[in-house]
Image (tube, rainbow, N blue to C red):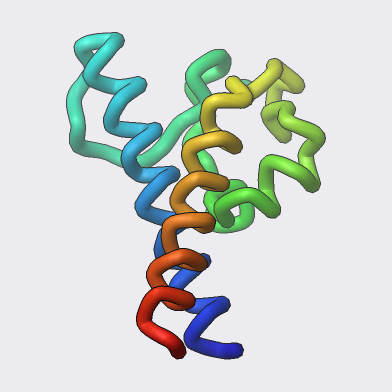
Length: 93
Ligand SMILES: [Zn+2]
């Protein structure tokens, strides 16, 4: 059960990273640096970076400016978590 959780969390983190890189590439921004709110530019804290949970707890809005966060973020993180789940099940762990 712990392995399942860790694999799902790892998958969600990779999904979040992929979403972030996709967004930065689309906007021709640097791939380096910390994550920021795309609306107000506030640097996101550790609590804002927990995949899926932070989105759900903030109701899909930035904690600092209240601007809506793209649902794509949740979709990418969910797909990553699902990939982690499928990986774990396929290995029989
Ligand atoms: Zn913001």
